[in-house]
Image (cartoon, rainbow, N blue to C red; front, side, top):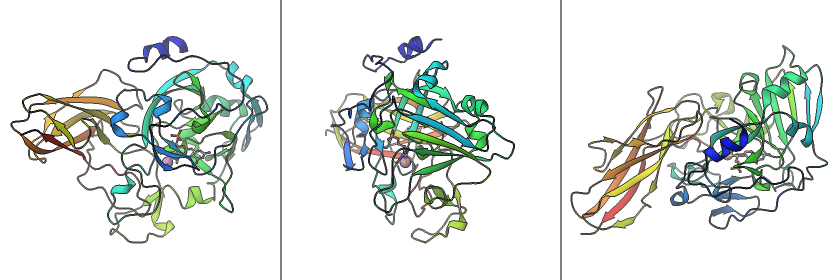
Length: 381
Ligand SMILES: Nc1nc2c(c(=O)[nH]1)N[C@H]1C(S)=C(S)[C@@H](COP(=O)(O)O)O[C@H]1N2
Ligand SMILES: [Mo]
């Protein structure tokens, strides 16, 4: 399937998109006026979950997580440097990248800190609730193709990814380190289009990584430098951030770095997007409960819904749209027995048989909250 028909095939629920000329300055910010501002600058914007109504998230509704200011990049002057443990270092222009046959993939991206606001005791960091997640069709090239062109040496163990953003004040640069096996995986991409448009500035124009199934911070934006290395990067975004306790810890405790391991793939999780929490529903009318479920590198086997505080569960119907690393829609039609206030729960199970916990493990940075989701619905008496 060529790229255009691939994108056309995704168009269900997505407004028509236009292909823009490929080379130019960073796109002006797309309007993000419907998002929740967790920080205006650097930009941390959360999607209100009731706006997540389609399998593909439109660009103007896609959450933004940036540690530092969005760099303004002239794509005509921009190059990507590939060096380190390689036989032939490369300097690639955007025109060279675009001359390679492109591939498109629908991938769900979620910030490791999504749901941080729900941890008890509370933890420091952006207080994301449920909407630091979205799904897009990403178009670009395989990272493995570039690495093979450069000739990765047997000594290589990691690929360090660096973007054009700079640490604020004395803050260190945002650099992430990807194990070479995941970097060489055919599904790991460097992309220049998001839902058929050039990458918007907030999402990494002109080029970003897409590391499918793994927590969002691996998908480095505004890429300028890939350094292949025999060792892990020693910066704080690798050695301190995005790490998780090796064993479950008492809530509130301090965990030394030596007792942590890097976060990688996302755990199984579901999200009810409809009805909105605290909605008031008329009596006697069936209620459509809908949302999405995802599980990092695994697929979704089932989603169950409970309308009686988890005493009983019923299988939801899974939606028609599927892609290896994309969330799956679910739907359940509920006929409330009578008026009153109800908790509606959703619980996903992945293809490995893993299911969502009632209470996720507390961890000092508040990562990967994946409790069974819940909303409250009030049925008119
Ligand atoms: N260069 C750079 N890349 C980055 C970040 C950043 O701050 N700088 N944030 C990361 C994090 S934490 C996440 S969750 C995703 C968010 O991508 P989005 O803003 O396109 O949603 O980008 C990742 N890539
Ligand atoms: Mo993130």
